[in-house]
Amino acid sequence: MRTRRLGSTDLSITPIGLGAWAFGGTGGPYPCGPQDDLESIATIERAIGSGMNWIDTASAYGRGHSEELIGRALKGRTERPYVFSKCSFPWTEDGGLRNGLEPHAIRAELEGSLRRLGVDAIDLYQIHWPIPDEDIEEGWATLAELKAEGKVRAIGVSNFDVAQMSRLQAIAPTDSLQAPYSLLDRGIEEAILPFCEAAGIGVIVYSPMASGLLTGSMTRERIARLPKDDSRRDDPKFREPLLSRNLAVAECLQEIGARVGCWPGQLAVAWTLEHPAVTGAIVGCRRAAQVDAVLGPGELQLDEAERAELNALAYRESS
Image (cartoon, rainbow, N blue to C red; front, side, top):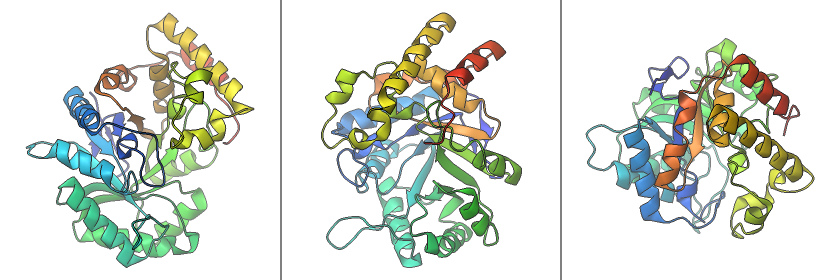
């Protein structure tokens, strides 16, 4: 699989990488329903075998459980994929999580991540959320120190806006931004993507298939059966009045995919990768069998007619 350079770093990443959110299961601030650990490990192994060269996780996913499973899957490998993780959710004494960017909290999170992942350094370490906003400079200075110490290779942010990223530039260059982007959510196009492109900041997009809505397999019935601890039940995209519109877009994707010979989710991911500012897209898989289905977008080249048709489907308001 071809690779792209992530911003100004020395990391060359495949256009799609494995998202490990689901491997956290029901724990942490982003629960996504029950998940079998052995299936998670098999999915990681299939992704690596398929040529994906990076995995994105966070200490918050399952309160570290996602990282633990990645560590188990990578143990003993002489060659491993890049591992990206995130901080800003330090653990509390009662085992919960809170928002926090204090230097000691970030360092404690990093040490926990390194231990769970079983690596000497994390390839890309990111601030998960800019909360609290008044502490982002202090948090960023800490990440810059960790990079200088060799504990992380590159540093980035997630869910930051242009003003927040601009505040960080005086402290240390931003290697990457992670942000949501899909046919249903184009909110980063107007200001964020141009800013990153001009500043040489690599962009990794998440939810390119809108948390499963654009896969072609999501139905009203399936949504109604989502587990009570699946955070998508509270997502406005999965509720009216947006749900009908979103399912209609997914249906159109199925029609286009049938004509060009690919799965609708592949089209959705490929569309995000067409933007010149986007370096890579995170694709979440729960099962090993799903990995094969998402491999195509990294090599799929849309022609002008296909691109225009997808752009006509895309929702133009910020989510």
